Length: 343
Image (tube, rainbow, N blue to C red):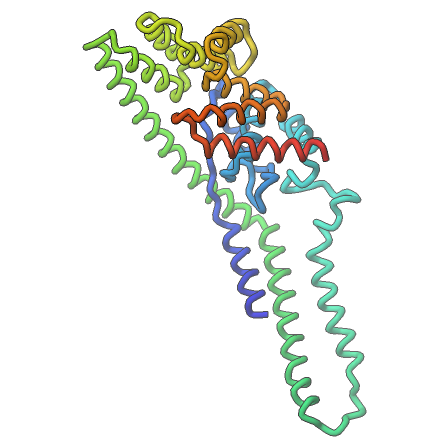
C-alpha cells in the first residue's frame, strides 16, 4: 500500500511538469500560430500516455502536430480540426472527451472507486460481529490488527484520489498549468530566437566566403541548405541554381531543388516540382533527396504502404549520409498509422 501511494503521488506531481515543443512552421501570421499551438495542446498524442501534441517528442505526435498546423494555416476552424482527429483516433485523442455511452467510464470511474471503497468499509463494519466474541487466538489477534490498518489505508487512498480529482478540476490547477505553459513558451521563444540568430550568422558566413570565391559549388549547396533550414525556400532555389551553373544538373542538385520548390509552394504538388523530380530520378533512380520527398508526399497523402516502400528503398542504398535511425522511426510511425487506419 505504501508503494501504491508513492506511485500515486509521483503520477500527480509528474503530470504538472509541462514541456512544449514548438516546431518551425511557416504560418501566415502570429495569430494563426498561437491558435494552432493552443489547439495542439488540447489534442492527445495517440502513442504517449498523457502528453498533448505540443509536448510530445514522438514521431507520430510530430506528424499529427504538422497536420494540425497545416489545417489551421489553410483556414480550418478549431472544430473542423478536432472532428477530423476524432474520426482518425476516436475520443481518446481529446483531453476532455464528450460524455457518451463509450466514454462514461472516463468520467464515472474516479467516483465509482471512491463509492466502492466507502461502501466496502460500510458493509465490513455492519458485517463485523458485535455481540459474540470468540476466544482470542493467535490468528484472530493478528487478523484484528491487520484489518483496521487495511481499512485505514483504503480511506486514505480514497481521500487522496478524491482530493486529487478535485484539484485537477479546480481553477487553481488550470491557472498553474497555464502559468507553467506560458513560462515554457517564453523559454522556447528565447531558444528559437537564439537558433534563428545562429542560423543567420551561418548564412552570413557562407555569403562572405562566396563573395571571395563565387566558384565554390559546395558552398552554394551549403548556403541553399541553410536557407532551407531558415524556411527561405526561394533563396534556396537561387543558391542551388548558382551551384547548377558550376556543376551541371546533377541528380543531387535536382533533388534538392525539387524539395525547395515543394515547400515554396506550401507543400502542394506543382509542375516545377514534378519536373525536377522526374529529371533527378531519370539520372539516378536512387537519388536520396528525391526519394525522401516522394516518401514525405506519400505519407501526407496517407499512402503509408508506398511511403514505407520508398523509405526502405532509401535504406537499401547504403548511402553514408542517410540518417538511418530517423528513416527507421518514420517507417515505424507509418506502420503504426497504417494499422490504426485499418482498425
